[in-house]
Image 1 (tube, rainbow, N blue to C red):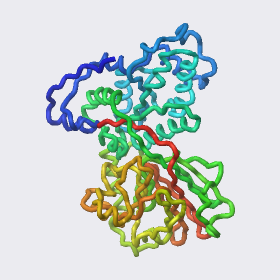
Image 2: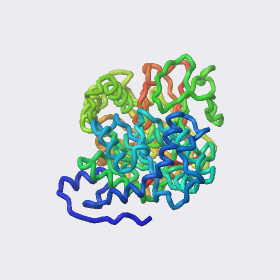
Image 3: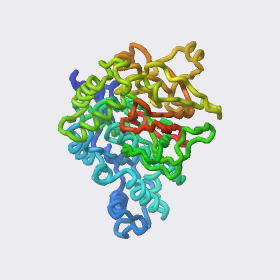
Image 4: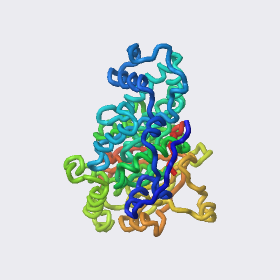
Length: 479
């Protein structure tokens, strides 16, 4: 099917600015015909209804005959870029419900999934499985829809990671191809969205921008993204309330190449998960934890990205990130008091201990270039510095993760405004953080924007191990 005819016209200055938020910085305005876009994205009705029925019944074993075409359908009936959209109505302030309605108008009701009603794992297990079942019975249209399928996520960083994680489960079963993912940014940071050209904010002229975004998503090239598995192993008696992205692990699978000795508890409890952007330990995670607790208990205070950032800034000041000197309280001293870092370099099987810099209060392991609402803390390092430190140029698909640190809030502020770079610690193919209590009773961690409080034992260590997932995720590039 030919791409829709596009007409370029001028926009007012304020509209042009708003379009940049959805990744349209290089264009003033592009008109896309609504009906041609629907033809490009919308799957045939019998397939949509069959998938909806399987998701509703949570069963793919028996698809009702009245939902299928006798003898199947020919491949020519398949749209150029069949697409489904997951929307988190809790993101983007008050825009979630109206955005959902707009997306349903542009595609179809059955191809837009409200995450409060249909979870991405349910779509994979029942909706996608239904499409594969119909294709396996000889329906050429269903087969082409499965091969061409693309996914858009309207939400924040946590929502994007949730959907990527569920789609990544297809690799374990060898169920290929994996649908690539694009982003409609509705969160506060929106770093995956920024990294792949979808912009950093939900635009004011969103009705116009969303149509153009779907069109771009149907044509955009596919890029690769490393995924990182995290395993948290702690003494069995500790009580922790992990984020939804961490699940109980069946076994304690710490790398045996590094002897944990007497620091390891006799009986351990473990959690595992996958992240795509970053894992951080320290004061920034503590601030995020306070912000999330407030948002959950008083949701009326968090009505959108601007109010969220104001509240976040308030927590940064009140919890000592800026104002409290290191020596005033043992619980606010540098992470060197409670943290050890071991890494594996690329093509190396041996673990190496890396010294924790003095007086740093936050350590970050970063996969993407963008962090903290579009900042680049690792920086654009010069070739001679890279050679001196044994680093290579950082990319999100290079199998390496960058580890850096912030000293305090003022240092972080200068880094975030890109006046200076963060304090570089290492570049690694695997990382193990070892946490041990003392003056500190709890540590704070966050993974792709989801924080939690991690209790620490004075007798045994808690280990946080990061290793690359063998399979990469696929992202639609919006640039």
